[in-house]
Length: 253
Image 1: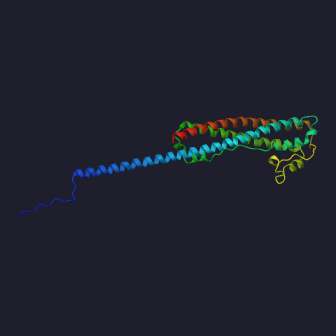
Image 2 (image 1 turned 90 degrees about the horizontal axis):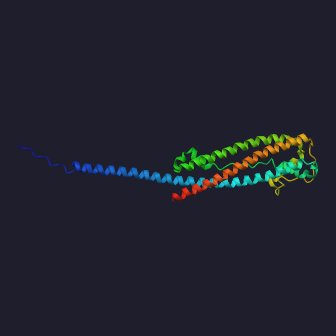
């Protein structure tokens, strides 16, 4: 009895169908890969723009702080010059109220500390890799180095002011200097420091002590003036950085 040949399965595929399915699958995977890469690029571009916007805002805050500190230093320089002039005069007793006032106010500090949130975030989170303008990154690092130098100078000024205060404590009446600072009642006066109501004699008129005190003032103001120069340079750098960032943002629109 002869065998009946088996009918071909309607579900069996020939090689051309397998080839088509392979091509479709490969195309789908490839397109998905490119789509994911494109999505990541768009995401990174958005992150870069956000970082640039935040850096611009931080630099704006820095320039405002620098303007304030520079103005403060200019006033302080004038007060220090006046103090040295008055306390070294033979007739200094005629100007004791202002001598006491200047001696109390020039020890006030207004140090500059930049806005570092975005810069620290870029460093800690690897955000610098998202910024495509390598020249901008270089300038940002230079800006940060300049800020750190200013911080170091300010720390040195803090140490020198301690020495000056030691001399001051032997030269001025402690009770008077204490009463001049009254946060509760001296709201109309800068830093709540009010000149004495009358002339108060110095605790000492020793010429050597007065000379030592003036030398410390001069040293302190030399550091302040150098700091003044560095802050002015830093402001110029910040303005240039903001211009570069604005150009980058416009190019990415």
